Amino acid sequence: MTAPKKLHKLPSFIHSLLAVLFWVGVWWLVALIYQKPALLPTPWRVLLRLVSLLRTGTFYAAVGTSLLHILIGLAAGCTVGILVGILVAFSRVSDTLLTPAFSVVRATPVVCFIIIAWLFVGTRALPSFISALMVAPVMMTSTAAAIRSVDPKLVEAARVYRLTVTKKIRALYLPSTLPQIRASLVTCVGLAWKSGIAAEVIALPKNSIGYEIWYEKSWQLDFEAVFAWTVTVVVFSLVLEKLVKLALAYRKGGRRVSQSV
Image (tube, rainbow, N blue to C red):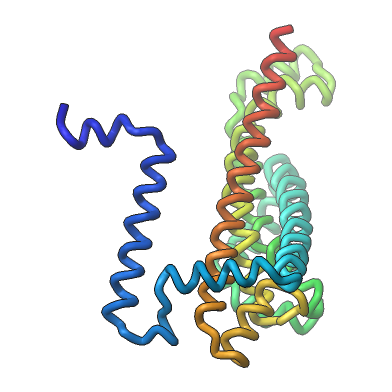
């Protein structure tokens, strides 16, 4: 058996671990070559700084505040996106009026919306608003596309047999839309988290991750802390995505069991 085949047979988490170790090694090598630890600390120094942050109440207050901001935005964005997607899928007028606006939102850099929205929604609400704004177009597009992908022959059969709206939703539209909505939700979690943190870095709501990143960079010049907070952002983004995947897989498995019974 050749080495590539042996590597291919390793568990997926081993592959992920090897990839992480590789890039940590690259980071370490670049930090040693750069020879300016004040600007580019080594992974070990960042880890030590992160451990010191974990011993403070500031860390947990900031993480809790940012999580609250972003989860509110994620929920609001998904709800608006799904409702607008349904409206767009069934109404040509709504499609004509709303789709271009959502396309503009997707094409515009998030920092532009952060600066403009900051003037109207205020510092505290801005991260949630931006997260919702970034999530809604993704969910709208997926929902509308899923509804439109339903077989027209099945739709016509449902009309001929005069199925109720509830039965149409359960028999036709839910089986088609749920898989795409689940897939989009996983994408939206990371998108909401990144855009929400970016809004915090600019708007600076107190006791948030974004505020701590800005404070350590601008006032303390502590780049070890900046990297430690950045690692925190990445870790929480990955953890949230994993939790959503596990929750969706659990619900999907539970539904299959209930249907089989």
